Length: 396
Image (cartoon, rainbow, N blue to C red):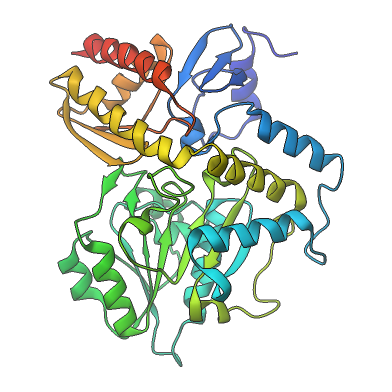
């Protein structure tokens, strides 16, 4: 039995030390709130790091998962299932990939990126294209392939040597123009760099990236694991820039907390994989894809993309109106919001907020990341205003 007195000791004794000490033992969630083992209530404005698109215990997701697990949970990829095909067709529609697109289902964002790395390797151009470009300070996951793309040296160095042929470039159009040539097989880009503190790309970056990759025969592979599924105010952030990628990595909010990821390909990139070149035992199973259909269906039915756009504007206005000297800038799109701080006190601010009953996150020493569920409303925003103001006052 887990008690308030022993769970920390049990965690330290039982779990690998990859995450550090947890802040609390969470035991229940409802809507935009979670409760810990001591009964304390928290306003969850991180949503499992942009995962819980419908918040916690949403009845649509609960019903869909309960019904599917009582019907058919897993069959392996020797077989198809109705939820799998329904979700694939839904993704081809909402991404705009259409009839020329294809979907590969995985279990996480990292696995979606791994599929993207193999896709890039297949785009060798008779051996000419040996290089993959990624951005400095990017984050694409922690498996060996995804980590090779991740533009944070401190994360890569303990595990080197990693995949050869990956070059990390600055997030400027000038750096991209200098690096792009006929030796590049793919460019991996986050439209907004979430783990870097919700950093926006320069104006026109994605448009220029699309022009250059097309010119040199490279794939433009977008990592929308954090920005996708309506969080940025459109289904996917790239749709705000008037471009079409060659491939799109999706995860996090796609199934509202049930593990699921996907790589969606567009046009000619859909012909690169052939049978036997990639796979997943659990990826795309009936349970996970039923959850995905429930989440995406509810987002459409309830107008939650429009809500994300509206609430994101309100959230930025609230933060600006607080008028704290700690706030240097407000970044991001939709309800993926980054607060750039004037001092390196992000961890301290995050802890102060948590003590008050507000969950936000400090991805680095000078940034706060805010990513509430897409269902967030006026009452939760007002509570956020009160708690975030008190947290900033506590450390000022």
